[in-house]
Image 1 (cartoon, one colour):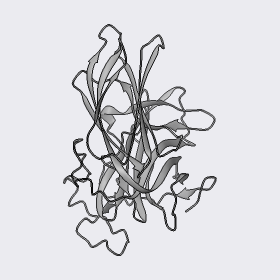
Image 2 (cartoon, one colour):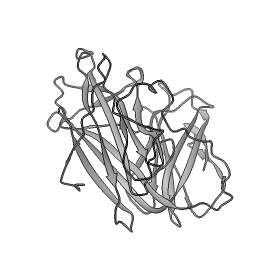
Image 3 (tube, helix red, strand yellow):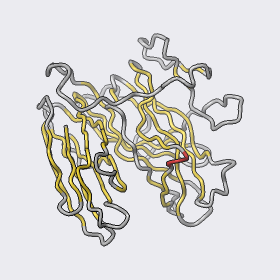
Image 4 (cartoon, one colour):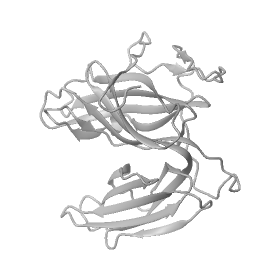
Length: 312
């Protein structure tokens, strides 16, 4: 695998022979994966079945504190590069990026948007860079030796004039941690026909999963357009920000769940920012160590803006 400064070509995905957006090859879930090889299938027979990892509620440690550490793949930043956006302004992005593990080959989505909830992102005209907003994995992505990454990204102009050919990159590739004994951060670029996909990630050795649950307690109803909210994390001594949520805060009672990897005997820090249209911002921060097993709850009080219940 190439490191930063190099690049990888995304493995193209076979078409299914009917009119629909191309999809990455499906992993065969009923085959033995003990040999470490990925088994790919062209078949559509299981297409309508649920093929994704679900996220459990935050609660007391189910293993009675006898949790086994593992190697973890944590996504940090996802960008499109070299995309030739013919119209000035923003572009509508949607599609998915997912990881699969040999032991549990269901899709664990780190980015998943349908056309109905696509995101509008700016594209830099000279470089074709567009930063995507990760939706977060359902649980941490374990990485005994390698993980399969699938992706399919579409782009439409704001006026939706290019609806007939909006697929800009798709494929699948592997990320591995062979022979690594220490956690590290890396960047990979995967090339497609119309653009490239940049992924920045951390591989954590001897790590565990931290589940975070954020519930909106109250919001300032006077602020036009709602309260802008940012939720992000830093993990295991790395300075890179892991975005978990950015946008208008959900209505009171709304709940969001996230899974973040953290090295054993290290620290996870959570940050919440609330702001309004006049750029006034209030921040909240809380950190904890991964040696703690159980559930803790804090109230993130952002003054007149909002208050959130944070369980971890």
